[in-house]
Length: 118
Image: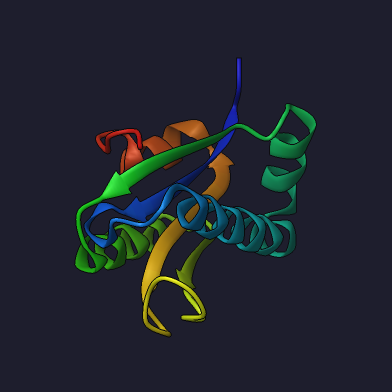
C-alpha cells in the first residue's frame, strides 16, 4: 500500500508519439521530484522509500493543465509544468505535461483522481 504518489498529466490533444510522450513524462517526473525534494523533503523521502509510485493520465488541453496546476498550488503540492524545446515533433515552448507530486495520495487524488489513464 502506498501513502505517496506522483502523477504526470500529458496533453492528449498533441497526439505525441509514444517515445515523445515517454520523454515528456520523464522530464516531468524528475523535475517535480526534485522540487518536492527541496520543498517537501518529508513527502519526497516517504515516496522514495516506498517505491516511487507514478501514474500517467491525460488532459485534453493546455488550459486544463493550467487549471490542474492552480489546484496543486492551492493545496501546496509540488508540481512542474514541462515546455518542450521543439527539437523534434512540436514547436518550441509547447506545454506538454504537468507533473504533480510526489505528495500524499489522498491530496494528489483530489486533483487527479478523475483523470483517465493514458
